[in-house]
Amino acid sequence: MKTAMLRRSLIVALLSGLIAVLGLTPIGLIPLGFINITVLCIPVVVGTLLLGLKSGLVLGATFGLVSFISLLIKPSALAGALMSRSPTLATLMCFAPRLLVPVVTLFFSRVKHAARMPLASALGSLTNTVFYLGIMLVGYIITGLDAAAVLGLIIGTGAIAGGLEALTCALIAPPVVRAIQKTKLIPKEES
Image (cartoon, rainbow, N blue to C red; front, side, top):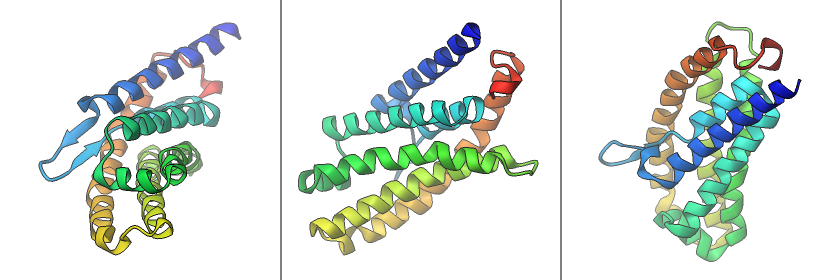
């Protein structure tokens, strides 16, 4: 029992460290010229599929914290504008979508279908994109920022980057989960 808990804790710690490295360095960005796609959802999705909701929520909170630190250190123009008007909404924007990723991932991983892991991975990633950008847009409206001016940018980012991030997550997370499961690091009843 202690060995299993130690293994779980170790995997969560490793995935949390990976989230920090990916989120606080350029390593977590795949530049496509006009837009960057991020891969920070992948460790959250992998941890959720391997270890369940509690560990997924810890990883989602880590993702949110890394996002919040990035917002404080080097905010994007859109997020920085919201942060200057409402630090509370900007903080919610950093944490809420990331905490929803494991919930959605786990829900769809229980669907009885051969493609459940890629589906759960893609929808977990899309949850992050939709809620992050949705909270940003609502924040712009609530705080009186010019939401109409950024609506096209938010929709374009969501469609292009969000779609590519979901595809990337669906292609990477399932094979990583299966490879870790084959190592027998995590007993079957825990995953």
